[in-house]
Structures are given as C-alpha cells and as structure tokens.
Image (cartoon, rainbow over all chains, first blue to last red; front, side):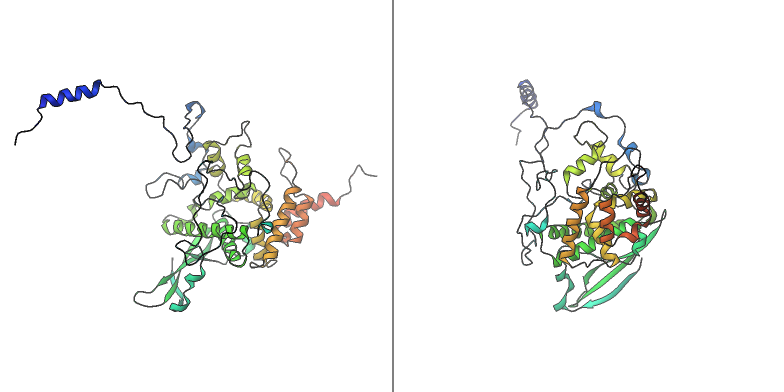
Length: 124
Length: 273
C-alpha cells in the first residue's frame, strides 16, 4: 500500500512547525515547596568539599548505592504527631502519616511557632 | 561478625508484637564511663538483631550479629533504645514522639551498618552523625529556631544557606577525641542525653514517667540560667548547672569540670570585705 504522505510534504510540515511561535515556558519552580528557585553564582566562594572534615569526606561522597535524600537528617526530628493520636495496632499503619501543611515551608517546625519548647505534661 | 540464635518463640508469643515501631533490636554493654571519655580510634562491641521466622516452622528466632562501632554511636544507640522503651510506658505526647523517632533512627542506622563493608575505624554514620553534631553544640533535635541560630552564628544575615548547613553538619568530625571536652560541656543542654546517662548510672528508671518529666523540668531550669559566652574563653558550668548535675546524680561523670567550678566559687571574692 503506498504511503499517504510524501517526503516533500513532510519537510513542508516541519517548516510550518518551525515558523509557528514557540510556546512560552513557565519559570522553573521547586515543586515541593512551590518557592521560586534562586541561583546566585556570586555567593559560591569555593567547592563545598573544602568545608567538609577529611574523615567525613568518604562517607558523604555521592554514590549510586545510597539515596541522595540522606544529606543531613534521614529521619525528620521535627516530626510531630497530632495531639491525642492513638496507636492502632490493627490499622495498616500504627500511626497516621505525617501530613504537613502544603502552604508552609516543610523544613520549618511550626508546632511551637518559635516559642519556648512546650512541656508535654500539660498536653496529656 | 558472628551470628547466634539466642532464643526461640512460639507462634502465640511472637515478640514482634511488642515492637511498636522498629524492626531491629540492639544490645550495648559498654561501661558508661567510656561514653564521655574515649581514645582515638577506639571501638566497642554492640549487637544488633531481629526476629526471623523459621522456614516451614511456626516459630520465630532472634538472630544477633556483633559489630564494632565508635563509642559516640554506641552511646546514641543506647539512648534511642532507652527512649523507645520509655515510650511504651509513657503515653505523653513528647515520649510518644521521641519513641517513634528513636525507633526509626535505630532501624535506619541498622540498615546502614548492615550495608557497610569497610574498616570499622573509618565508619561514619549518615544517620547518627547529624544528631552528634547537634549534641556537640548543645542543641535539641527538634527545635528549629535554635538550629537556625547555630547555623548562622558567625554571619550577619540570618538565613541559613546550604554552605552553613554543610559546615555545621560536616565541618567537624564528632568521633574525634578532640571534641570530648566540648561534648562534656554541651551535653548538659541535651535532656535526653542527661536522662539516658542517669538511667545508665542507676539514678533513674527507664520506665518512670515522673523521672522523665522531672528531667524536662530540670532542662527548663538550666536553659533559664544560661549566660552568654565570653569570647575566647571555654565556658565553665554555672551554679544552676552544677546544682542540677548533683541532683540528677551525674556529678561522677563530670568530676574534672565540676572541680574547676568549685575551685572558683569556693574562694572568697577578693573585693568583698
């Protein structure tokens, strides 16, 4: 069966595509926090490994066997569970999953709002 | 490494039911005097294990492996073990939170230890080193304003950068014995570490809720009495810290530091009549 389009017609269609105005790309954004990415090369003074202690260099070398997520804290110490949360051994997960507010910076602990650490006794 | 089967369990009494959050268990038998005074390259033994179901059998077996670890890591592992155990007895929010955190940390650390195949002396943990770095500066784990302040201490602007975080978390090796003096000074501000040492020394019970809360109240007292550091001078314990170290029974561990303070405060003020 003969082809419906010839080589010449394909070329013209490519040219037409090239003549149409390219779509404007949206600026790159950090999808996790929805904050704009700020890259300022003038703030980079030297390679980061100069700040790393020599004995720690091997452990923090980027490798294919370790996940890149582990940089400083592999378990979030700021993780707070909702007050009154009860342990449910029958559930799929004994504790409900942590759901941070997407409107807020996930790296900041808002549970105490910058005030002094609470006394757990009063929260029982 | 040696693998030993230390106990077996029937199907009705599987010990996995008692583990709320963590998979692996640890055994540490290091004397507590070693925890704040170790030598360069010193390693101590610790055992980790888990409950494994026997193939084609209805029972479970504890399997244990022995590893050599740097002393500060073993101290942290034992602290997390104690916090995990305390969470089973205390239904308070803070004890609950720390229990889950400790359990997750122990599991992550065990996975890391299992994967490591190098020289034990060169082992530096991804999981526990950040906690050690915060303890070295006397900063609690979960209080962001203090961590941010410590990150940007030497800078004029107060927005932590990735460079600040790298310097803070990776700039100093906390396993190095040169950090011992700073550890001994700043560990006073970490209530979990003080509570763990007191439990280990026999002055507090791991399951006691009152003792746990008492240490939290003591921590508030210490933080209220904190004074600004004089530049170029290694800060000595203030009177509130000395008093609490004695009350909590930790004074035998800090003999050297306390003797310096006593020498200063026991002498009469030369200006007084």
